[in-house]
Amino acid sequence: MLEVFMAKDKGRGLKCTSPIKRGTVVLSSDPFIHLLSTEQKGIRCDHCLSKQDSLLRCSGCKFMRYCNKTCQKGAWLQHKHECAALKRVSPKVPPDFVMLLGRVLWRLENSLDEDKTEDLVCIMDLESNYERLTDEQKETLGQYVVILHSYWGLGKLPLQVPDIRAVLELCAKLKNNSFAICDEELQSDIGTGIYLSCSLMNHSCVPNCTSVFDGLRLHIRTLRDLQEDEELTISYIDQLAPSEDRQQELQSIYRFTCTCHMCANKINDDKMLRDGNGEVLTMKSSKILAVKDFLDDLKKLQKSGKFEEVLELAGGYVSRNVLPTRNVYMARVHDFATDAAVMTEKFEEAFAHGVLALKNYQEYLPEIHPLTGIQMMKLGKILLFCCRNLEAIRMLLEALKILQITHSHKGEVMQELRVLIEQCQIEIREETKTRETSKQPEQQQSSASAE
Image (cartoon, rainbow, N blue to C red):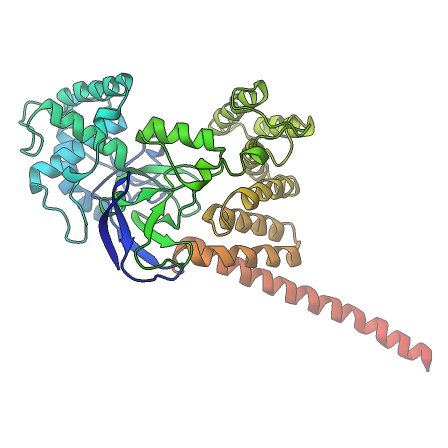
């Protein structure tokens, strides 16, 4: 179904060898290596990354935590060298990237790069783009290598990375090809993973595929019907952004310029960047710079759990009409307000903000996009909680149209969506039955009066 080919001006890519229907899983991959993020420590298992109320601590390093003995045993092959390294540098803890790099090196040392047969490429063949990095980025990688020296110890490096330059190249490969692992609702970055086959997919701001996680496993699903020999693409970045923001992020992280038609023609930029007077703002205008700073502040407050403050600030910003609803940055303001309102159990307020964010999703994202489906599902759940059942069922069915394409039918999101729809249908039937029962005495009284 898939074939590796050389894409013009992009290097290697993947294309389909026959037509493919939308919603098809064209590629599934387990991570070559993965790491739970430091922010999720004590909340999720270091092996399977699932959320748990209580976790078992590794008796050796006292740092890694696991769901149970099964996860601890499953992690041991990768953790045994790491365990000794963590004890050696304790109480210091290496940065996440150094720990990820260490795991790759230990795997190379133990397997001599004996990759799984399902992978279309080995880790040493991934693109690094090291020569394109800025001096500052190269210096950062160099600092990681210095930290690695004390973490790794006195042992020799694997044969595949015989010198420091090779280690720097490997660092660049990891930076250039890693995936942020998130939950199915796309709500939080849980960790980082290297998915070898999926790394072959090139970027587009209007991709024909999307990447969705089912636990640790990464699935690539088609968003529309594909023709024979068509290249498969995903988006490396947030698509809900003006072209200049997208280009800056791609250049900063991946060191390339996107030439898709969305970027080349700056599609939707004029609508995304208008102010309340209809003027199209530049990215350096005071209003745009101010809203970006404001979003950073909201993010910090959200991380600190100050949801009341987030809701108050976001609500005040919206009420002042600093920017119109269609301005793309307002979608993010409303997103923060929606989540804060849910956390403070102000559900009607959460729905009001969520609907305004959804309008931007629908206007600026492709028709089939997982974020839109997840937002509709969230709004349907809020409506159901507010006993607005007829509105809820309509919203949930709209979510179903999208999520049945972007998500696994057996995954947590689709299972929850089915439960919500069933619950909504039951409550609507109960409401109907109650209304019909209450009408009967009135009808009987009317009949008696007529007699």
